[in-house]
Image (tube, rainbow, N blue to C red; front, top):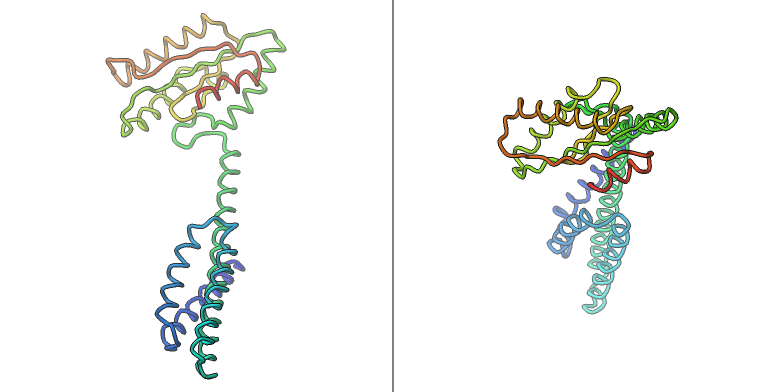
Length: 253
């Protein structure tokens, strides 16, 4: 509620300033409109740390221009007063727009942070219900500790989609992920994806068991997608610990 009120006040202030610039018929009104329009565009694309500096420099330069013009032309006090009003309007407009822009960007950053936190808290991908990367990492940490404690093997399988048609990649990705869930041992093995790679973490198995899972997965893919030529690459690695798993996954991201 407070943020909405602040935004409304700032927008109203900018509107009043713009209205005054247009209808008060002050000296250099057209120039002032051009400068404010260009300034709004420039301030929008500038990095946050430079916006205020740009606004202050612009205000000082415009004030120096008006002062020099009044001095060179020996303008009467009435005209000088109009130039002061002109500069005050420009200063008010520029600072109000800077505050509004900073306010909007702050809200945007807060929303990005909230979305990031929500993604970290989510356990499953909304499209196919495979594990999110953060949840996969959390569960893999415990799974690898358990495997090490019981002297059992854990293996990572990477299925990297090599199909280059971008329009079909998203549908292929979803199909690969859904079939992965149908292939693994439910509530035992782990599956996630990064970009075009699907990762399986198979617990309490050996290389022969990994080959069985791979064969079953490829058969399920053929039955679902009916492809002629291979459209993915396979990599399998025995995982020693969490740091080893992280390195294996980072090698393809």
